[in-house]
Amino acid sequence: MPELPEVETIVRGLSNILKGLEIATVRLLCPKIYKDVDPSDIKRMVGKKIINIRRRGKMIILDCEGNLTLLIHLGMTGQLYCILPDHPIDKHTHFLLDFVDFPQELRFRDVRKFGFLSCFFADQAFGLNRLSRLGPEPLEIKSSDFVSLFKRHKARLKNLLLDQTFIAGLGNIYADEILFHAKLHPLLPAHSLGELELRRLLNAIRKVLNQAIELKGSSIRDYRDSKSQKGRFQGYHRVYGKEFCPCSVCGQKIVRIRINGRSSFFCPDCQPFAIKSRK
DNA sequence: GCCACTGTTAGCAT
DNA sequence: CATGCTAACAGTGG
Image (tube, rainbow, N blue to C red; front, side, top):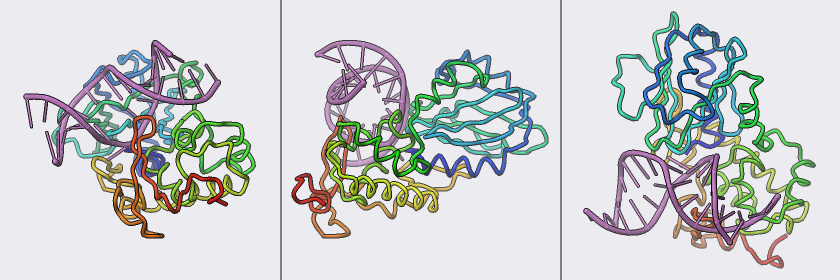
């Protein structure tokens, strides 16, 4: 669920609330969700202030005093939000922070437990690796870099867009929406695209992501922002989840295929595969 | 009850 | 290195 726009929304919301707060207590309710770190080491955050909150790809990064960094990935069903501590804690809540002189606590809740937390000193190798494995930010990459990046690869567009080491932050929903706006078939080999098509693709990435961020992301089922609010971009999906629906541009029925075990939705008329019907 | 499906990623085999 | 399958997990809907 949470892809770049959802994570960005959460980070912006939490940044307003948490920046500068001192961590009073750390509660670890599920030992399995920690990666690359001994869960008890997370307690080193107690007494530290949160300096900054930022996003990289789909990762949420809390920079704390003492060069300590907390990394949170929401997986498919993760939620990260502030709430008053008298709200009941259900069995899917795995991590809590509370703060000095602040009434709310920060909760991490994740039904499927595909999300994870990690904690490291800024100079520690594994932390650098987990972040440094990520490809460029789709809203920051220069047009010329984007074009040369794709030209070098022969994999199919949909796979590349989902590959976090290639470009960071896109997931199944936004990859499909982006390809629709770019009028490109998801199975096209990247290196078969012309320069114009690649620029169209980058423009679609910027347009779709920025609009989704404005609307605070897409809520299909679980996604909520830092104040437990739903996003509104799901009302603007053109292809994702729209199998058999008429295309909003041409009226043709949207189709669904499987690419690497995952659903891909597209319009067969607006996103042709045959080279001669493109351009 | 069973089976298929779900917005992610890492790890492994080919 | 690229590609493709599976598992990790829990819930929902047919």
